Amino acid sequence: MRPDLSVLQGHYLQDVLDQPGALERTMEALVVSAALDKLIGRVRRKEFSRIVLTGMGASFYALHPLNIDLIQHGYTAMMVETSELVHYQNSLFDSQNLIIAVSQSGRSAEMVRLLETNERRAAVLAVTNHADSLLARQADAVILTSAGEEFSVSCKTYVSALLALNWCGDLLTNRDREISRKEMEGAWSAARSYLDSWQEHVWELSQVLLGMRQLFFVGRGPSLAAVGTGALIVKESGRFPAEGMSSAAFRHGPFEMLNSETVVVVFSGDSATTDLNQRLVQEIREHQGVAELASENVSSAAFCLPAAPHSIRPILEILPIQMITLALAVLAEREPGRFALASKVTTTE
Image (cartoon, rainbow, N blue to C red; front, side, top):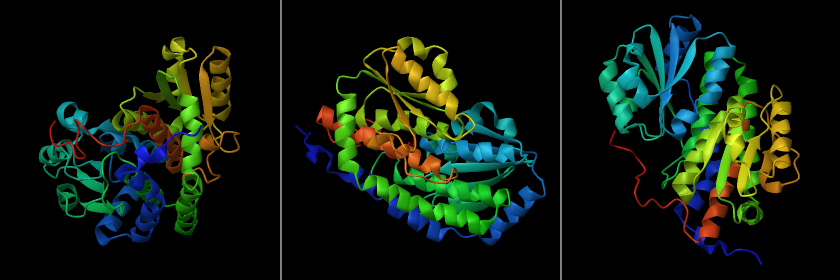
């Protein structure tokens, strides 16, 4: 008997299904303003000693692919949660540093504190969904996403931020813009092809998750964006305990928690560590854990990612986790994404 999906009908599901549109709108709206062009020139001339990448929650996790990209191109980049940056690492507010600050609202408590603490010492490049936000108004340059209004849990703002950050990385590393745009334009069609079967995915995952008590998301490299955000949104949308970590970190302790009530979703990632991640799946299954590989060409439709260039894979990796949030809501018979205690914008530190 198939589960009743009527409990899913609401604003969160609408936001999830609007992600292809949000990606397309964001891509069409990305432009290099005079202020952004000036900042890009300074980065390419190596005028900054460090590039500090900061945000909170999903906005922070979305920075993983850009962080790796910048380091691989010879830049000194580092990721710091905004809450830690403003209170414990404020020596980084220095004219020799560039801060790339990501906030969908542009007015969270931590971003307001960042702007107050910085006092315009470090240059700030903002990535936000709101042009009229405090962050956008005070930044040296702004990259705007066009996700539209979002009800609660970050979904279309998250994937739009990933797209914008990918574009930002291409600009900073002087990648061929025509190739870059062509790859990114495939993001919304790939997302749409997966989401067109969302009901089937939820049905499949409701069977996988039935009776499960523990949920882990693990991966390496750029996939850390999905595993971090995934654990966050499962807790937010479904109030179900979940952890996200690197595949290597999972072996250092959590591996001992494996049993028949534990599901581990492993992201295969790119070729550098695919073999390691696939081996982890095999070992989890050998120890009576339930392991699912999120990758291209796997038998499970819910975990089968559309074929895509590595640059946009992080955008697609979050989709199976979003389907998990819907499946958990069906099993709990509760509308997903409706906050009882939290709010869309965190305004208190």
